[in-house]
Length: 207
Image (cartoon, rainbow, N blue to C red; front, side, top):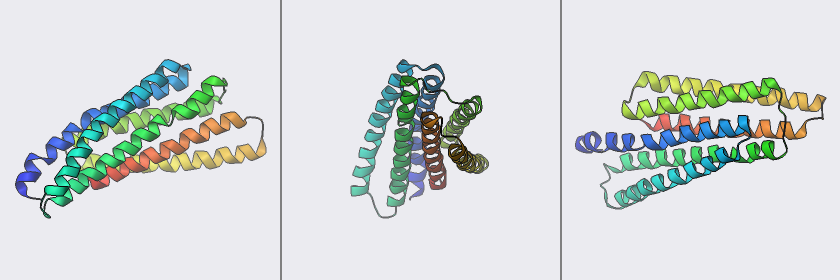
């Protein structure tokens, strides 16, 4: 990448992605409200925000594709990097939107999760929202300390999700009375792990 392209283009694109990350954060908020309040309106907001994100990302994807056709070999790594970031953001959005499935199941069947599980899932929503705020800060200022924090915190949450899944599956074997609650809980954990993995992948691309 030329020095001129790095100084002129990269910061602009990174900062241009901040509204998308803000919308991802709002999607998490809508999912959390729908989960806690059994709100169909919040699920509609979730879908609306995903549509906005898709439209915004499509515009940048188109720009990247055109650039890759015309740019020099020395500048291609930048555009490939940006393409990778966009792809990970798109997957994160899809997995946040996919929370709609288990949450709608919880609402429709009036599924009751344990207090412990509800508290844990709410903490996960809060932590992911905080990490999205950190990603916005990183897009605005490529701070290596903040990048290290985001990776470490995401890895910690992923490990916690695996432990929570294993613990829950053990309880499932001992007590077969709550299959719908277990299904909702485990599905939410699975999507959370995917979101966090792709968040880590974005940070690893930001050089």
